Image (cartoon, rainbow, N blue to C red; front, side, top):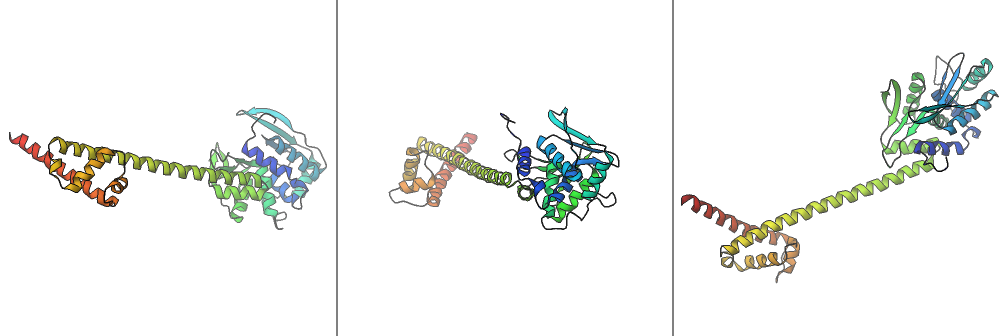
Length: 313
């Protein structure tokens, strides 16, 4: 993969594979989830397909441990722009060994034999993740989905996820069952549970960064809105003051209104609080606002008087 940017899904699966899950104490539970969720098997044939080479290696190693036979993958060409690795096995003894080792039972697909010990659920989920999971790069979106190979396997995975406290949402995608999560918290927990803590930490860090960026954007937008409001308000105040000046009325107003009017003309960009601090006897923002409203009222009354006079003439 040199020179290529690995997908978040592939990085998570490579992290799981690097931990050698088939050599741990719950390796049978892992293999159970791997084959149950990723394979299609009947009495005569086992079929396995994946788009990740690391998953094909995982299948091959698990198959060798369980049956003593090699399972060779071959590239089956690209589907939707993605490479596919495909294998099948029709060897009767191997299929029998696989079924017996994993406890596959058509009447009870979710066998309790590999899920009762401590940690078995996490190991099973880890195998299921390797077999059929996909995770969107958290920098783009929060989305984890499982696409089981069969409907029965999907029902088993749904049951287990609910037992673990992560009930998924379900849908049909191109006629196939899909179990998915769109919230960051369960995705973080599942990545940690299946053995991809580094990817889980990356998702957490990305979430913190996105939250901080969104908060900064909200603050910036609020500040911009406040600035726009201040500019618009100052422009209206200046228009009223100039109108009163042109009509020879400003000098007839009380001294405190003349003082605040002069300050506004000299400091058109200042906020009301800043204007209050510039007065010889500083006053609060509300005090400045009160004086500005009095100026506006004087200007409005004068305009209405002029309009009435013009109509009468």
